[in-house]
Length: 113
Image (cartoon, rainbow, N blue to C red):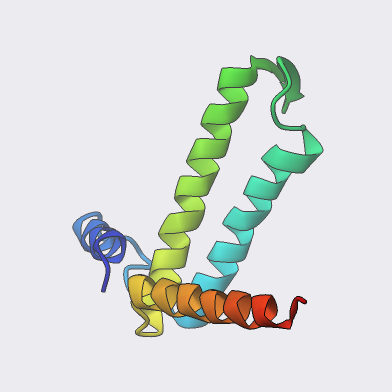
């Protein structure tokens, strides 16, 4: 289990969250909900503008960025929760994906004349 996953597990136990041991399906639903909130910030309200209207409040670029940071944090927490609930170490999963992409890149370069 990676460091992020371990921190999330300790937090869940410490706060006695009612979902301290969520099922994989619960975790997936929560992850998708959080990812939707990231999409909301990035698409519906635009990202990078100086002033945006967000749920009745005018916010500056920093405010929008802070909202995005919070939503990405929530998303990462739920990804850690999902990975832990199915026994996957995210560091190992990421390394596997990096190796796969590197192999594809090498293969694609060999095909280019």
